[in-house]
Each structure stands twice: as structure tokens, then as C-alpha cells.
Length: 178
Image (cartoon, rainbow, N blue to C red; front, side, top):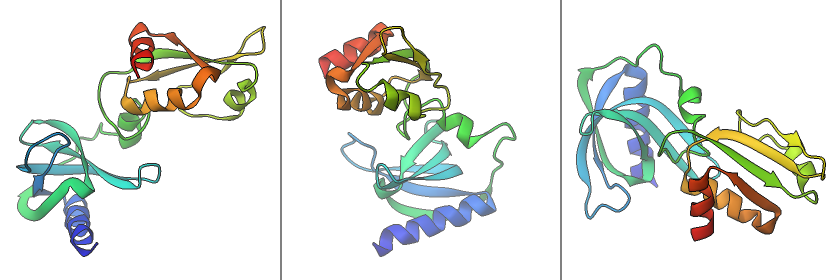
């Protein structure tokens, strides 16, 4: 849609030029959009979610936030300049999470894949922190360091009875509740 393309163009130009952007953002669960000033640090397309996300410093919240492009209703380039901190690394920032859903602190998680699907766990690297371990019964234990997000719970539920959450307890509860 041409409106979204125009907003993406403004955001991209401001990111390249390090200029602040005034946006009107309709956050998930909000009753109406709110005006915000952001400083784009990175633009991340997500093929899995068919969406584009903007990692930016939000002046309203005074913290790094993730904004979904299709929830930005308006964007206006501003003259105020900003700098992206030298120690900001988008890959490192995103690596703490299962997908682009950014919530919570990374935790040590452990999943056990039954012997019937253990080979898939051996062949597939789902996350950079993953170190797959083969068990004597033929199962595979997959430890990872991730935040406990809805996306992670959905991934686990997709395996049904073929995967067991060994820890942490909070993740076990979330999967059981789902």
C-alpha cells in the first residue's frame, strides 16, 4: 500500500541521515494511536511474520523499543539529529529473542525432543545460543538462552507431544496454560 511505502521511505531516509522521526503509533492493545518521537537504530524485515519492524529509541518511553511498520499511521521527518551508540549491535540485540517480539530478559531454557524427531533438532539451528546434546535414550536436549515470549511458546506448542520443556518452570507453566 502506498501509504506504508511512504512511511517506510521516511523512516529509511531518517535512519540513514540520523534524523529523528515524529510518528503516530497504534500499539497493540491501545485504544488509539499515540504521537512519539523516535530515533531509528535498525530496520528489520521479518519473512516469518510478513512484517517490517523498526528498532528505535522511543523518546516517549526513553528506551529502546520495537515498532511494527504497519502500526505506524503517520511519519514526519524532523531536523533534530541523533547518534546510534557505538556499542549498539542489532544482531546482538535481536539474538536474545526467538523472533522480533521483544519482551523480557533472556533465560536458560532446555527442551527435550523425543527420539522420533531428535534428528531434526541435530540438523536444525534455531538459535545462535543453541547447543544440541544427544541423550542415551536417543532424544535430543536443546539448551538455548532466550526470553520467554509468545513466539517461543508457539514454537514449542507446534511440536506437540514431541517436545518437553525441561526448564525453566515459568516456561513450563506458560506452555501448559496455552
